[in-house]
Image (tube, rainbow, N blue to C red; front, side, top):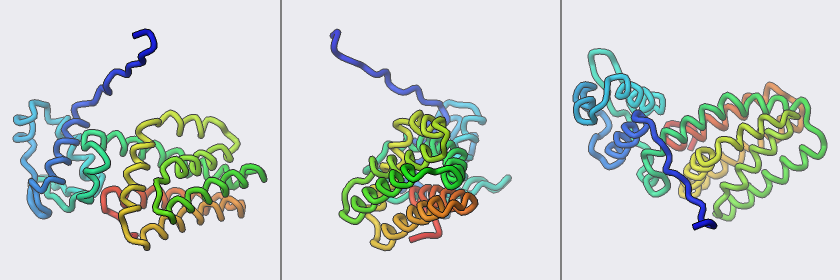
Length: 238
C-alpha cells in the first residue's frame, strides 16, 4: 500500500451535477429542439435542490447557446451538442470544462498581447515549433491535444510573465478535457473545419511575430470563442 497513490474523487457542485444530468438528457433526445424543459419548480422537486441551484444550471445551458429562457415563457431547447460528444466526455464534467474556458478567456488574450510586445527570438521559435507539431498532427488525423496545449503554453511563456503559464498549468484536467473534446470533434469533422482551426492558430502566430498586440489579442479571443462554439455546435465557422 505504501507505493500506491490514490486520488480522491472530485467533489462536484450540485449545479454542475444537475447541469450534467440535464445535458445528458438533452443529448439522449429526451427533449427536442423547440421543446420546453421542465419548469424550475419541477426540476427542484425531481432533483431535490433549491431554485438557485436550478437557475445556475439553466443559466449555464443558456450561456452555452443550448437553451433560451424568457420570464413567463419557460426554458426552450435551441440545439443539442454534437451527438458524438458523448463518446469523449462525461456530461457531469462538461461544466468544469466550460469554467476552465472562462479562465482561459480572461487569461490567454492578455498573454497573447504581451507575447506580441515582448517575445524574444527564442520565444517565437518555440511558438512556431509547437504550432508546426500541432499542424502535422491535425493533418495526419492524429491526436493533437498535447501539441495544442504546448502551443498555448508557449504563447503564455512568450508573454515574459511566467504566471500566465503557471495559471494555465493550474487548470490541469479541465484544460486537457476541454481541448481533448474539441479536438476529437475536429478530427471527426470536415476537412474545412480542420483547416479553420489551423488558420486560427496561424493568425495568432503571425500577429505575435508581427508584434501587433491588438491583433494577437483579437485572434486569441476569437480562436477560444470558436473552440467553445465547436464544442456546443454554436459557431459561425464550419
